[in-house]
Image (cartoon, rainbow, N blue to C red; front, side, top):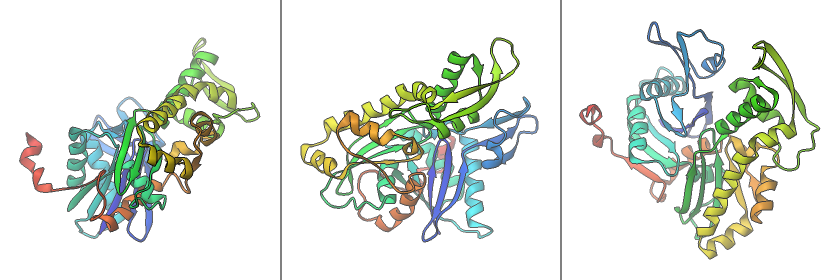
Length: 342
């Protein structure tokens, strides 16, 4: 059985060859500190954010696209792999997505967690490469393709040609940083503290980074910083624009930096083909227009940007012999139990 996993900071998606994406859940684990037991994983754990007693910790075991809590990541992966394989005692081959600028230490954490979750063989693929494959782009010709994958923890920007990466960068900017910016803005502007889930809902409902007109609005609830009592405030799309515009400009500056180091011939291809936007951040209203205005290059949101990377992991199994940079087969004997202990 071949399994492709998009192990994201915000969500985890698993795809099976021929079946597409079969699991899409938040990357969240709820842990009982008294009994030292995991009580919920995925959607059920996500529902508990901000609503648990002190002895229950709701954890995101990944931060900025990499493993920050090894044990929780291992448990989460094992549970999700078991869900998609059922009771079949199989040792699947697994392709894992990693940010384009991942370090050796960060890669090893992903590899070890995947191996302990039951993988027979592990392959690593960089998110921009998987995103292009999932978008249906043929990356084998001598032709430049640029992709911007905006995930929960990182934004990966890359130029790919002839199955290899020509230029790339990974920014510690993503959906979670946008949520945090909204929380800070509401606290500063309205003296009301709102939760992570409320900020995310406001982002999804109101975010417009290209000429917002104030026509979209929603009511949010939180705690008044002055009185300490529950409060509500009405937010407009212009509020969200002011909250996240600096973060979005970081992404656009990253795009400009990569374009500046792209060889002229490939830059010409990108000008014709446009910049492909994938990931959840690609769904922000007006982002494609803002990128086009600031770079002079047309930006295109791909079909199904949320599942694009996960689809690409499955497609990668058919290209094991031709993918170059950004795709690596890991020999598991290099990571024995003894080396893990060391």
